[in-house]
Length: 356
Image (cartoon, rainbow, N blue to C red; front, side):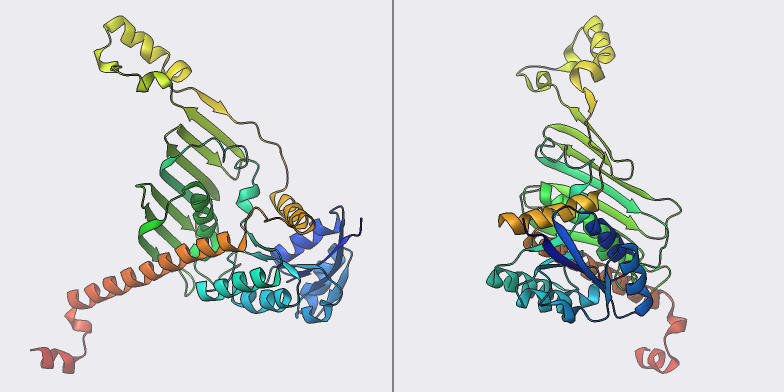
């Protein structure tokens, strides 16, 4: 079988990981790493045993596909350049800077008949894969994704940097449109928000409460899902997941735990987590999520099928995140207005005289 010719565009942290993994991926030929910064492209290419290239456009006649790991602001231009030439694209999350840009990428990929995959890598996390089909219909979801300040992805808010992963996971679970979003956020170090909380309410009544921070002392990545089937807990860092199933006994007509006789109540309490709310740790197969993502990308090209995370799904996550950022901006503007009214001394004297 002819190898799939792939280039990595972007020689930063994620680009180097992609290049190193692609160099060892069966059925794939890593053609080059492209980056305008000399040191970045040479170091990334050397580690992956491939060719460094300054301008990715030099590679158009030599590749079938590209992995784009450039800053978010460049996603639209770089991906569009590739897609227009019939080159399949895996673009790191978020798909683009704005939904308008994302819509353009999705529409162009559809018109050109190429694969457009978005790098929502948590879909490939060993802790997520066995759980996704067993959660049932979610009713309440909460998540926390935080870690120390890394100086990466600071061109966007923490919503597009970290929270977007959990937004994508939530949208993959809830088959109902988002009806309302409330959000708050705060910039600590740079011009963009470094911590944020968002509450998503769906048309079917499901609620998701998502928190993200890139100024945390410790790295945590977890999600809890309360559903019609029970309760699920996922630790993305430890790559473990547990599921608590609700016994059918609780939904039997006429069953009332409070009405049980004393001896039966004691037995019920003793056997609660064995018979009524049994917990089990789901088996996981250890693996590299990014490597699995790249394999899915290559397979979707060869088999002519959709990747696990399509451009449309990446666009849906971006649209929610864009609304979250808009809500944060409005909330911050309201708070600034309240502070101004509460402290008239900061209003210029001329305006105070006019108001009086």
